[in-house]
Length: 440
Image (tube, rainbow, N blue to C red; front, side, top):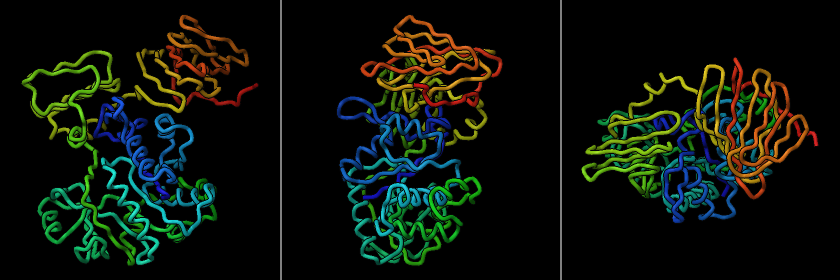
């Protein structure tokens, strides 16, 4: 299978665990057989590999999410990077050009386009295989997956098929309705539109060239910021006359709110959290190094991270977005391709961060114009390079960098390296960074 996973959005409805850098699909909340926790993107990627070990998987995502994807899936994963956000039609078009011009995939190959964050079981991926086979039958230009509705949802668009067969031509589409209209659509045999499509790669490229002028992937990438913001549904799906829908009645959940997310959690508590026996339907996710205790609560979600603390009735948690939009705070935690960092303290002219480098990984070789830095190694072993001079660092060692000097830190290939980074200056900004190639 050739699969495009669409990974976008900031997931503000799952604040404080999600933010502009760490979207909902990167939150580790699903327990594995080994007793560890994995994120939505890790779970879906693992399931794809189990269903088809030879699948070609490409993740279409914004530049801000690349580090988190590499951190969680490894540096070898194929990624089509959007220079900026332009909705799903430009993103899918750019990825289609990437598959043809960079990955060398034939225009005759079938391609499956799926969101990266549904909560599904293995029957979903068997359905994807059937969609791929349906593409090769040439009965339609585009094949959709229609989800059998579990209830009259107001969050999803609806697909009205021509008949009740497993695979049917599409009669029409309906926008997100109110509950009364949703009930009416379901009586007509309507299916949820889960945003899953299958077609030939050449079809995607044909539609892209129809609405955008470009010759190849690089040209489309270079002019990406000038493209119209429009969804794949509006631009392509709802304009296509030769279109089929395949019914899917398996487990499928969009975990976009705390209410739906907690329904999929295997345990009621993650992290240092506990509750008394009088608590009912309570879930706690704690990423802080302090304990949380809940007593006598019902239907409540508690979530704590360096970004903030949420205590909410589960039903009311769906209305969190406008409140989060009013919170202006820098990103306090992020996963990078080399490891992760967590902000410990924000001062008037200082920023203190705990940095974790994975074994054998390093930061970019870089400098800052407006700030000095101090590194204090607290565990592990590694090397620093400051203006080309290399030295070994162990717990307790201190390295200082004046503004303007080039520096990096490299973890030992067998040990994780942790250090505290203190940034000092009147203009501390993530944009104050100049990257260089290594000098040796």
